[in-house]
Image 1: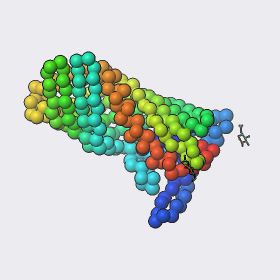
Image 2: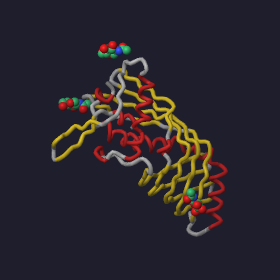
Image 3: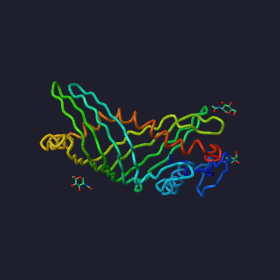
Length: 243
Ligand SMILES: *[C@@H]1O[C@H](CO)[C@@H](O)[C@H](O)[C@H]1NC(C)=O
Ligand SMILES: *[C@@H]1O[C@H](CO)[C@@H](O)[C@H](O)[C@H]1NC(C)=O
Ligand SMILES: *[C@@H]1O[C@H](CO)[C@@H](O)[C@H](O)[C@H]1NC(C)=O
């Protein structure tokens, strides 16, 4: 989604009129010898604009970022679970760092890979959990907050270019994280022992939980993130953005 900043144009649609407005962003010539490095600098330069949001693109701010609703199911041996996250707010994307950017264009398919690192992400919101371990059922509603340290991964955006428009069909992202600290509040309708047990379990076993939930969360993130990216890409000329 960062590439939009590279975009030379932002489209404002007013009463059926299309007015193209230029954004003061750097674009990079695809055949230049330092293309990838130019893209990286352009992403770094334009990131603060994405963070603030681009209302003319109907693109919301990224820090804080809000996420209305998502349900994650997981099944692993005897453990079955369903977690619904509501009204989540995430802080910290403004400190994202970009290690490298690569772009490939072949047979009308454009792919952009952005290696990112986010030093710290803090999330809070409401959650509902339902779980079954063997014959034992548990669940409830409550709130949580979550601090995640050192998130690293590649944002991998891929899709067809048609009619001079890039449509992001997939936005893959499977980051690694260094540490997580979770607080749960009132998750089991006031049963503090269950709440604290769930919190202990989550903090003790987050690496396993994270690994087993990652494929599921990626499936949910993919259409959400692709939709985000397309708010920008669907409104700009591909050949002007990536000349
Ligand atoms: C890139 O393409 C343009 C126009 O096609 C050409 O003028 C320029 O020499 C090319 N640059 C490189 C580094 O190949
Ligand atoms: C996270 O929640 C816990 C428990 O409610 C609270 O003590 C802590 O201050 C919260 N963390 C932040 C950074 O707000
Ligand atoms: C490209 O534009 C033409 C004419 O406007 C339209 O018929 C066609 O469906 C478009 N193709 C795509 C893939 O959007």
